[in-house]
Image 1 (spheres, rainbow, N blue to C red):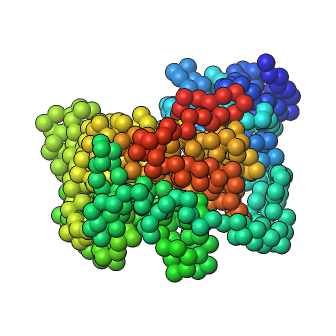
Image 2 (image 1 turned 180 degrees about the horizontal axis):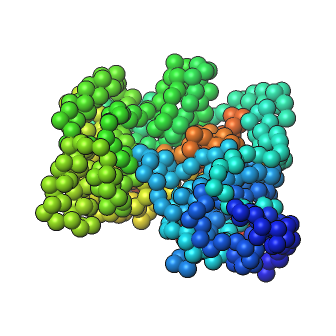
Image 3 (image 1 turned 180 degrees about the vertical axis):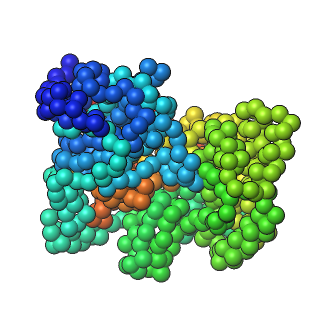
Amino acid sequence: MYTRRLIVMISAIAICAVPAWALQRSIDIVFEGTRSEHRWPISELDPCMPSDWSDYKFLVLELKASSPQRFSIWVHTRSGGRRLMFHPFCQEVWLRAAIPLDFFAGKGRQGTDLASAHNRRFESFWVGLWGPFGPLKDVQAVGVVMEYPVGRPRLQIRSISLSRDDPGSSFLEGPVVDAFGQCQRADWPGKVRSKEQLEDELAKELEGLGDGSRFNWCQYGGYRQRQLKATGFFRVEQLAGRWWFVDPDGHPFISTGANCIRDISGTGLVSKRMTAWGFNTIGNWSAIDQSAGPKKVYTAMLRPGRFEHAYLGMPDVYEPNFEQAIQQAAERQCSNYRSDPWLLGYFLGNEPPWPGREVELVDMFLQGPPCATRERLKAYLAEGDSPQRRQAFVHGMFQRYLTVMIDAIRRADPNHLILGIRFGGSPEHQVLQMAKAFDVCSINVYEYEPTSQINKVYQATGRPVLIGEFHIGVPANGLAAGLVQAANQAERAKGYRYYVEQAAKLSAFVGAHWFQWTDEPVLGRFDGENYNIGLVDVTNRPYRELVDAAIQTHARLYDVHAGLIAPFEQRPKASEYGTPESPW
């Protein structure tokens, strides 16, 4: 059982006298259990609170959270609940959050991948738009829900109001970030206090940094245990029913990588750490100076450029110059890579957000300015308009998009692999089947284990599977957990081993890339994400438990994938209350 304290700050009579309704209350709650829900009927909040919110634009809260762990805000109506995921920046700080009510009403039309389609950033918080959505005309209650809370988080709300104008979102006290980029409002063992502390810790790390010999790698990071045909570039091959990358020298290769590796210092520290920790691939979204330190295999993404008419990452593929624009982009970008044996291959994009939203996507083209796709749609729908026909049309667009992209890369660079489009979520079978043309099908899987998704993709495509992104994080020290939560750093380390080794036991698996190398900023990246998902923190110090776990798993990976030893079986805990089957 939980307790709560509700203290009315201003009287109902005063509220009723205000033309634009505004209620101030003090709410003090604690989250406990596997699913901790607190709900307040609007009649309990105040008898004058309107049930029809249609005339208002913002739900305005003044709140303080003891933890950066996310929670959902629910607006319950007679026809169903409306939800968004709320992430306060930092912790133990009073902030104002002016949340646009449109976020409860429906999905936006912006975004080219899942993150940009769903995340919205503000000065003091960010939100995830995951629904359910609907109108706010018959509101009955407001509530909050936290799943698998870590450490009995406390939430205080001292003001709730509706507003027609934006009062702004901001911190109401400060400072919130220190000189090292850490959360000012939290304290923990090992927190950086001085530049001298950082220098001393780095010196000690370098003294004990391994040389990577335990992994038995050749220069590319392939396994010396077996010699296959060497072609001078990466390829894929099935051996005894199991898929492998094969490196340019002909050695079996499993791609252990990390995304968002950024190091232009020229010191070689990142490359040395990758060698010591068993990471052989520079993943997507990276920029690294390889002039110093051991050279690493890397990936590239073909960027087709901006199109005048595009929605949810789908361009006007029937525009007369579409093929020419893609071919020119491929020739311009691939010319730098064509002869480089260190390139693993090309990604074609990232997490297209339109699967499952085909009907909406058609509406966006129909309601947009004139373009070739809109004209084709009009003619096509004149013969019959149904969700099934709209879906079929969009799938035809996607097939054309992939065909043009793949053909352009093959012409510009016949030497390297096509690594797919990094599907996110759980696309339908019809969408996945189009990935048969890839050499490798990449998917981003945020789960405690990815085995069902890998099997689903392999059954649809028959192609080997590369995990383009995965992570697990802890809600602490001013940072949110990420999409997959662990109770603490020890459980996070178990999470890495469990995920990668469970994937590696499957015959279709050829690699996994962690997202990402460094923690995200306390005050969020461009779309708001502020996750504890780094191998290193914002001060560039390794998370020792996680790094040691990665080393252990990478040293076993060849034998696990070859079926010689069993994978790590300890599932991590999300909190003291256990672990959900899925974080979704």
